[in-house]
Figure 1 (cartoon, rainbow, N blue to C red):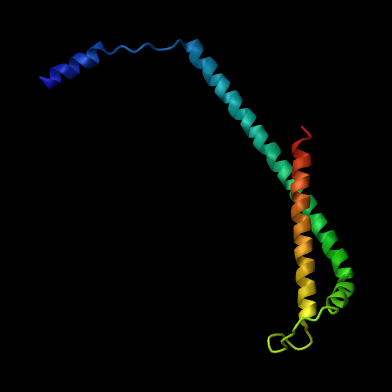
Figure 2 (cartoon, rainbow, N blue to C red; figure 1 turned 120 degrees about the vertical axis):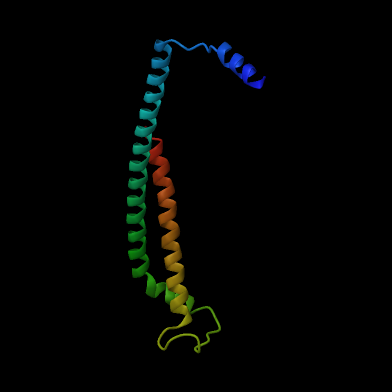
Length: 127
């Protein structure tokens, strides 16, 4: 009984198929969209690489400048009265030196990150 119902259901099934022209035009449109997305992704990769290169150069230059300013920063930090525990630090290294290096490394990293974001924004709007 159920078998006859299924046979009847499938025998009455006659879906309407679109024409070959409609199918090909939709397929061509989708292929063009895929090609456009591929080109946009390649352009985005180029912009990203350029922004990373610019940020790396800016971070390097900032690191060199801050390294040259290290004696000034260490001397400036010594004007503050930090409690220094010599038990935790190796001989010859003071807390002022560690703090100065940490501040300069942080400043250099923040500069590189900001330059990356600015460069990426400028390169993205150049279209």
